[in-house]
Length: 509
Ligand SMILES: *Cc1c(COP(=O)(O)O)cnc(C)c1O
Image (cartoon, rainbow, N blue to C red; front, side, top):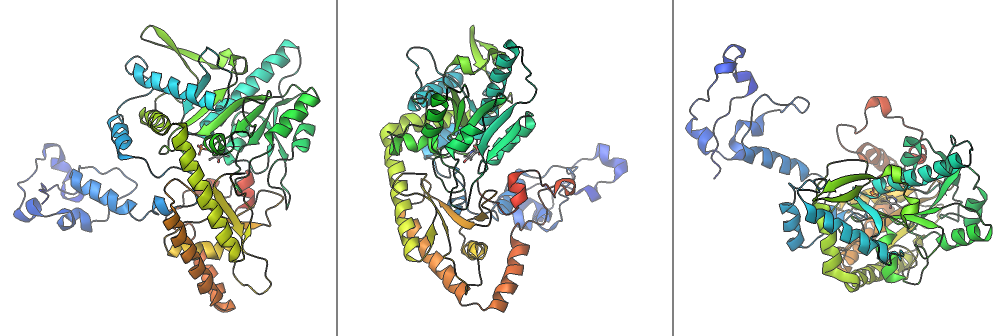
């Protein structure tokens, strides 16, 4: 039983006596009613104006909880790489750390120390040469911030070099695959760097190393190479780019976007050379909240050596008499996620990560082979050659009247979130679907999905052309569902990004 005091609504509080208003004695019903018996449950709340008066905490909490229950179930969201499971022990510690501001090094020196331990462990996992010094790096909110920092460092270093040579430094450019994650486009636009793309083709969805290196000119600040593309999970051939740069004696750094692959490849393919073992790789980012196995809000960027992180970008913050270097875009942030990362690193150890990533790879391989048996065309890799995900499309057919988007919609009706999307620019005629295999996606869950996938196909196959047409109209109007668009009308026709242009890539992250 929740005891509630009667709170007057805005309408009931007359303007003249508002100032001196005291709460009337609650009538019996108001005092003993539960959340749904209170007037709040039947009121239309104004969502755009902060209410004048308080509401009881149980009611506020229940209303928010009820509204959020209409969101998708994160565990059935196979569109995302982002962690949806952590152990209770660390959940409790993270909750206890909510009130710690990570940047207050002086007050929370141990949180700062824990970050430094994580950086050292991650840099060593990526084979940085850290003989005795601490590794160079920082925690971030995610790979996006990490990539912004990596890009800024490459830009600054290039500018310093050009200045020293007395050359123009006003037109920096960066080379990347058209299948980059949107944060690379942001980084380039925000920091005034020209984007030079190596485009995908109908059969190649990763960067072509030769083309990438051919694009390098005196204004190139660096090449971005992806360890696990968002579209198909394939690893780009970073060694080939490195070797071409070395062979041609070109002074151009590589930044590896290992947002998803950074915590997979070292355990599944330890001999794959993609990291600091390659001399041209100067910086690497990884999302702690993807295969780093932490809830959303943490990423990492590490540099090969101080030479690649120009001094003018780093600020020293004094704590307990010692300086802590700080290189971030924001100032305050919670300490909980850095602590969560540390827990995973020491709790699981290399063996723990290896076991998990091996299981995910196996489940992915099983799913690939089952989908293949159903006639699907698999576009992702198996046996650990890429990320543990399955990207696939329907077999070409002149008779079939539905596409991948219709299948995604059918699955959604069964609770599963499996995105359909179009490939990166220049290969966007290709439509595909993707299932990301995450830690909490066990074989049992995989079997349920396969079962529902079969049912979805059967349902669609039983529909005739007219029904499908009607269905697709229904699908379009329900695709983004919310009543409120997330975009302000002024910005809704955004055409400048690669993703914006193809227009159909949504819900993939
Ligand atoms: C997810 C992802 C990003 C963005 O990372 P966040 O941690 O979500 O900011 C960048 N690049 C790639 C390849 C990704 O998969």
